Length: 444
Image (cartoon, rainbow, N blue to C red; front, side):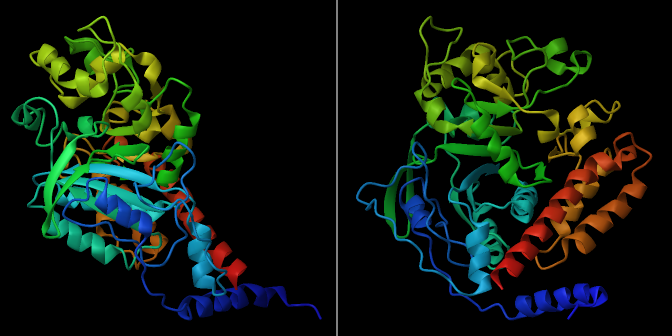
């Protein structure tokens, strides 16, 4: 008996709808790896909490995360699961976690939550957020993240740490460029954190078990899965330990090439808004420098470097990073410009070829463009993601309204190239829905 093709599509939609509404509710389970991270790698005021459904334990490959002392090396295999909901979680969860670090200070709460939301919207692998925050922001951060854990499609956990500076004068670091702007420089440094937690005093090493980490500024937005930038770690050669994008594509527009009074990387310098790091390699490396003939570790080098160049640096932590990699260029993997797309890439005319071809992968709204009218194209993307709720339809509530909003931005050079801003978002949303349909159909 032949099936009428006209009935096939409605029948498939009906089946998917029934599967969606009949998904059984599954009790939460705290991920053991998340608990250990709360006890060992700097568990701040908020303990990491596992996502909304049970996951297979993350199996880290050799050289990745080390188990806390006293923990058994045996892993239990998950029992086979019969229902489609659990098959969906198991299929969506890859064996390794991705680690995302961000520093939230002052009035950056909204931006912080928006960048974290953008990471959750599109990523495929479970995420661990490492949030360094002012004490005043911690309660609201914790409240919002706990709400999200029951509503987002992928699992994540988080730790909120206090702002700490382990070498040199803490007050000097705090005033470098902007509040907390230098905090990420200390992510590779194993320094002690003293903090009252759960009615006891804990002494912990910050991020001691994290092998690799992506740091982003709060004015950054993911327009595609974080998995895709995480994959660059596998492309590092034997000497590379960080991945960053250039500060400028053209030397004639470059700030460093025209004004810098200190050493900097390459022809146009590096931008520090998106930094992919192999922390294990950074901790083991002796860096060449202008202060001593022998190499120095990251921790040994940081404060003397600041003392030597503090009268000539303008952009704080970014300038220090440029000085370090001026003397160690072989340590840098150069990210294409679409992975750190800023107003400079379009406000004087389009000069990021990668974004023109593939679309923007990571948007960086530096100079406050999310909150003023200087670059309405950037502001439109930020507001669309900020206002999106996890229960809504990605196309109807995010993509189509954003597409319409770009009609109001054509009076600017950046707004005249909407395809650059929208191409990757559209591609990513399609992949999200394809994954959902594939997993549910396969598990039914």
